[in-house]
Image 1: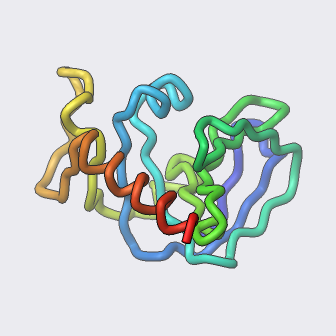
Image 2 (image 1 turned 180 degrees about the vertical axis):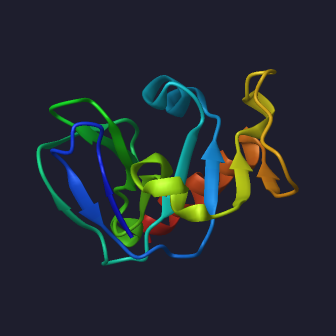
Length: 142
């Protein structure tokens, strides 16, 4: 898949891990993306990027990146050593979000009342997601 930011300064290419999109409704994603963060998981080792990228360590386990020129949201990246090859690329960077269906929404219990994605798909609550991240971090301490 190929994509680019709003101004075209950042170009990227990657293989999707699966033909699906996911949405995150956590407070950080909503502030960062201006809405739910809708993303495509990247097959590890396939992300290729050119252009002016900036990133911010938004938690103990992840960073978020954007185009330095236009500010377009680019990706969410896990920084834990065992998972540091995980990237979730903003689905809006590719045409028609790859044409992929939504298969998962996380932080479903804290999403704004006006948000409703169509279709049946997996959902996870804040507690479920954060327990999963805690287990990732715990595994890194072994």
